[in-house]
Length: 101
Image (cartoon, rainbow, N blue to C red):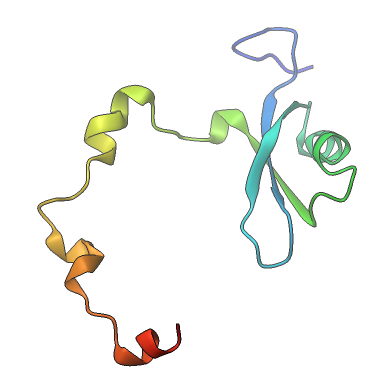
């Protein structure tokens, strides 16, 4: 067993992502504890894909994920109002696109 900063007796936590169908984006399925990547893949398959829910699985060590915090909410996710070119209302839709509706 590898030591974990939260609980000294648990294996490291791995985040599990699965792809439901070919061409679809991967979705977060949940988390598993495992000693290594191979065990994490097996645990993920047994937990989240045993009923053919997906066609591919990714496992990522949770401590390798960098994420924003709720304290970062406003400054990090504020819209870029000083960059109006990023807003789609400045672009007109070509006629050919409108006819296909």
